[in-house]
Image (cartoon, rainbow, N blue to C red; front, side, top):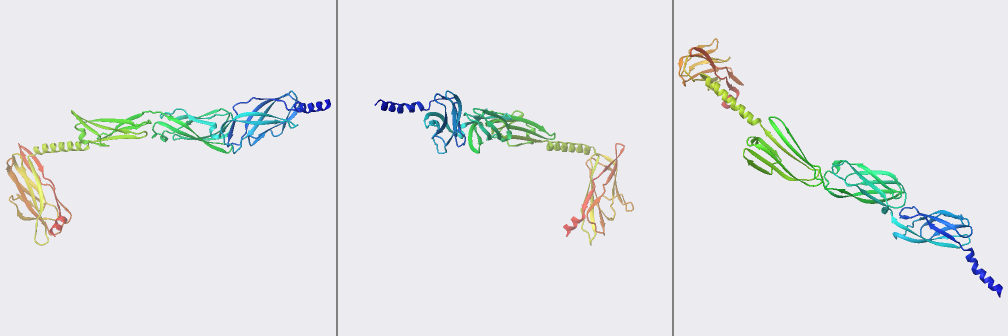
Length: 458
């Protein structure tokens, strides 16, 4: 009976003597399991063998796989650092902190159960992207990409895109590391953007997997309205006022231009002013409106002094001519007209109007005849003193002419040879005596277009 009881007691005590006896401590922290990325979560353990020496194997039903695959020998009383890795399972849908069991098994089949807690996330949740506040007057912007978890990413390709820039970079990103990039920007790319918050997109590729992460770029309000003025030209002056909205908010604009009452008559505007006000001898032109970011308002005022200067020059010329004309004692005007003649003869009537502006004496008027014509024996009321056909000239003489007296001298010339084109007669010349001095005056030259007259006649 005693032998039977002893045997039963031995059978009950033997498992406890042979059972695995390990002290397990976790030395790592913040472990993360990233779904969609075929990388294991790494856990560091410190294991002390309080039992007999043995070879130990690790396994779990939580993940898709676990390493180390083989066994680890731990001597009696020995403490050993062990790194285990658990691969994610594709069909696992739970996210956040997850607690699971794993087992350490001895060679005799006895095993010890342990539990671990890890954080399960998607690849996109491992990153944070952002940028410093960006002012419109700056030429660069600083952005960052941060690894939020305790996991080392190798061969990361990040493609940044935003309304302000496009940029890409390759790098490694260690656990909890933050990478910063100073990106040069072109103001023309965002000059029309209004202040506010804009999305920063980053396409991240690592280990053949890709994800998109979004951040925010703050574009604070800046009211920057620059004004440039220039004036060019002398006779035709152009005044340009240019306003550029280099900020990122809509700017109210008011532009005032002043002109005097004379210059305003010769000034044109583009665009036309919104308000016109006259104050005394000046006129004020006002343009009002809104200028959007990146837009330009250009006001052009063009003053053309050419026309008033020509008018002044014309008036001065007339005054001078009138003044000089008033000094002339005798003025003469020569006129020719077509005369119908028998047959096909070409005939012209020449008239010379002699106007004595002052009293003159011993007046002699000589007119010369052009080539190829003959003079008709019929004259006007004033008969010439002599007709010199050899030297081709006609002369009239008057003993005196009273102030205001007008004499009309006329004669007819003809030619049997047809004359076409522009027919010209030379100026008539007058010599006279005034206050004991001999003076001279001449008429205008007279022209006749024979071809035009012939067409009219036809």
